[in-house]
Length: 618
Image 1: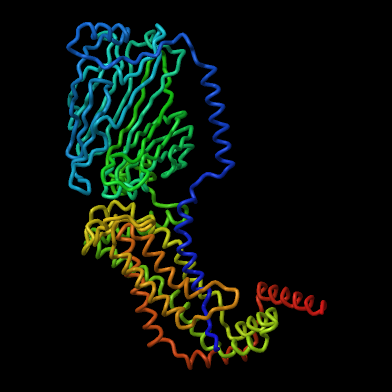
Image 2: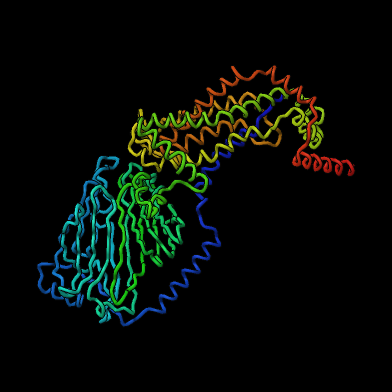
């Protein structure tokens, strides 16, 4: 039976591209050495904490207070000691501008509700980042009479004023009229950033300066998208530390915890929205933790992650506190976060790892931002796809030219295979000589795939995390940053989901025809090699399964990209390349003296040595 030639390198290239899907999930996992080092570091911290523990201190946690019960109020004030001076009142104060509305409670002086006015969830509900007790913020400190208090249990007295166009809310937990701990919030017009300050007055001698003051901040990330698993995949605790280094906790671990030093900001990201606490003086240390709350897809589950930043030390200067912070409650949008250049909050956006992140940040993001400012999002994706494919067309041309040359050489290679069918080493030597004389590189078939790998991975991060795509519709897709749905299944298919997305189907069909054009006509099954026909069919199926739960914008890009590539290859085949001219050029190349490069010479020498050793054993 006559054998057909297979361009194995092209197949390998496609398999490599899909292989990076798996690479994405483990690339950021810590090594065993890093895990061991972190455990050892944590053990030292825990041991030190035990050594510093003072057993005579009494941790005060007041019970739920009935404000109508005079006896309960008296007991509450007695429990809190000097900080029982402030009148107990569980009211809230609204602090807002045209973008965000904050509710600050007298109990704890903390933010208990954050509403983003410009955005809605997938089911048209207002977007809340803080609501119904999902967040807590407080200071743990010791008093001179050996009480351990937490500010979230104290009552603060509010005072709302104006500072120019800004609204200022002062919350004071008083020891007397002139002695207090103050939280000061200031919000400006058209700004998601809230200036936040913690300071004390006259508390030298009330707060025990020999004991640490710790800041604790916790938040449970609220679900905003139709798929909680999908949204949870892009919700992570990210932080800036060690002079600009950006790190993050695991997005999938049931409980990931790290103790870090020299932190500039801490971001509790909820996919397209972020709650960020930043400081101009840096946090010396912080114990960070992220607990994954999502076990499976659910249409009713409300929370995704349980974030915590605790044991953050605040230093007393002259027995008093004086710290300035910034709260950011808003979209994880590059256009918005770029305004806070001094803080570097733009780095909290998951552009991707290494060179892939660089491509996203400095190419795809600005290009798409420019195009989407003039065009609908779906059309902007198509235009961006055309630009990328045109830029890659020279590579496509060289790849197809290489395939055409290999096709012309096919009869001579078949002759070599038959002549040396019992001597694999000699067969390989002669094939290399033929390719060298003809000026053909068998490796050129996989070069386009290798070049496209960074682009593939960059886009894999760009589409699901680009805020510019959020809730932008195109054709049947109502949100290009999430998957499209043409049918909802009454059951769940493992690895596929409970819905059918059309864009991944179209992309899979397009890649199937592309692979048929590049490899289907030249396919052979080599002895001992994997079933390449099976691999050719497997690749589109892998795309169909993997992309069914990903951003429809990504599937749209690959559908259009493969269509354009098919048209380019048809144009090259029918209007540019001429088999007769290629054959004549190859014959001309054979007559030209060829100078071996170092690699070719080394390979030839190695093969000749191996052949000589084989012959000497006969």
